[in-house]
Length: 470
Image (cartoon, rainbow, N blue to C red; front, side, top):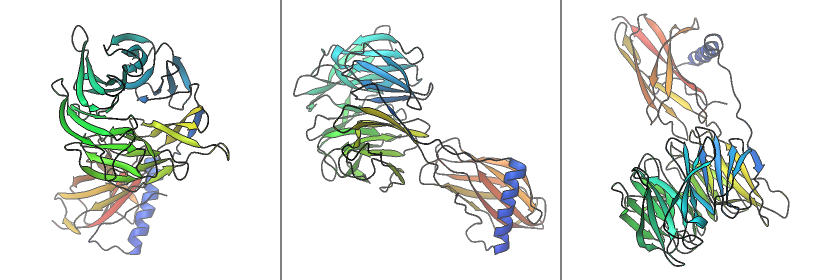
């Protein structure tokens, strides 16, 4: 059921007030609003026709999911239900992805071609290929990609012992490649992370199985200017880094280190410790949605495989445990195998059946979380004068931008009839306010309704104000 908060702190309401408010809510919902209920689709799982994997990208504009298949030299495309749409061949050593801001182009790091390919997300055809000048193969070609500072950044190997950063600038008449940045920091091709809301911040992390080095760069001027570097980060260090993701504001990076017992959070300003998310042994994947909710996955066969965390809260509010195919096999999340749909409605998870090369794509529907609405108003107010209501929506996950609440006024709560008098915008922290000018004397009830979204359940709250003579 939906959690509801009726009334306001500092006001006294008897049981009759509550009953009348509940009856009014039912009447408004059914007779005036015509509201219904909806049930989220069940989680799904589909086998994939690939036997290798390195990266995942979600195209919200066309509701497509892209998965790299480096040893099959292909890019696999599925729909949001995990059904295969197309397998794009000729992608030599397809490794990492970067999706353009308009979702029209998918950039693919082709390690075994020493190049970056551009794929049209509508036609699903390769439209261009850019030579990175790195050479090709396991210890040369580009692997990880990120869009930052108006460029495509790539991680690559200089040789078997060193990695570096490069960039591809497509803003001019001819593509311009710049290599050999971040030298003497990484012992292998670094994994990259970026976020559109902090376009000049780039995080690079070593992920070759050794003690990890993490670096933060300012790339606003086209160069990778080092802001901070830390080796073996986190309260207990970081060996064998598997994945990294930035928070939407770019102020924190969450890392998944296989040797840790939790997902570690670092401050990008100086890479100081900034908290942990309690998961389990062998963190293997992490993804952060635009509202700051973290999906954290682990490799271990015991306990939940994927947990969700509200930003800054170390305790998960929901979790999934993948079903095991038999007593002799486990379903395990692969490194870097998590991605959010940009609207936060679902999570895509790539798993492998232990002892095999069988991969599957799971579509995990984000559960609607319980939401409460608190409404506050003065105990009494003169009629024909401004009366300001304030309130707040609260839930385990953030609300982001674009949310509104409707305001209903009931001049006679006993009659059970109300009028929709307006709506109010909800700030990112859940707060809202609305000013009304009541005309009638007596007990006036205000009911605030929030209709919910893919992440939040419907909720309402009410307050009664004694309107007196002006």
